[in-house]
Picture 1 (spheres, rainbow, N blue to C red):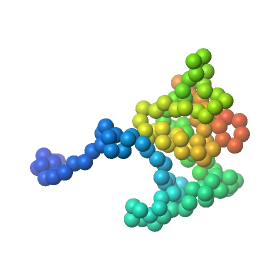
Picture 2 (cartoon, helix red, strand yellow; picture 1 turned 90 degrees about the vertical axis):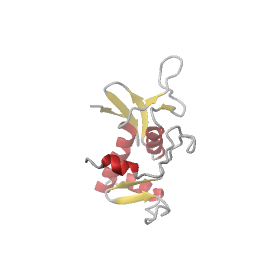
Picture 3 (tube, one colour; picture 1 turned 30 degrees about the vertical axis):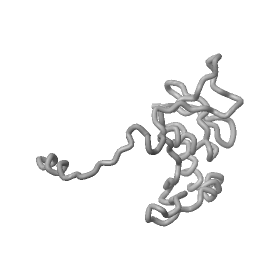
Picture 4 (cartoon, rainbow, N blue to C red; picture 1 turned 135 degrees about the vertical axis):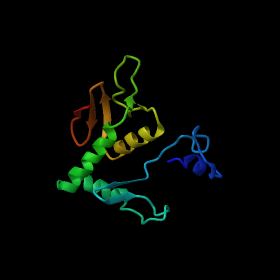
Length: 144
């Protein structure tokens, strides 16, 4: 668009928090939408409040397609990122205690922590695979 410079010149205020000074770079998982059902949220954004997260926990246990889709969603949250698990001094993953994640951005860490709160924990990451523990032994997935 040839008018883009004119349009940019009309901006009066631009708010940014690139350094995280205002937000302290803290991200929280507030809501999600799975199969057109909104979970979380309190309606403060002007929309309706979604189903409570306790309902999502129930859906995750269901054997039907809604449960399968919700489990796939949580698995994707745990795996589709660049988060790595903190290694102990001997080079092994921090097993036996709560996993500590190293993330390039606070939003990636928030998503992985959210999936862990719902029982889908990233337990290991290699160059071509990631392992997620949920409702049984860890499942290793190929990362493309």
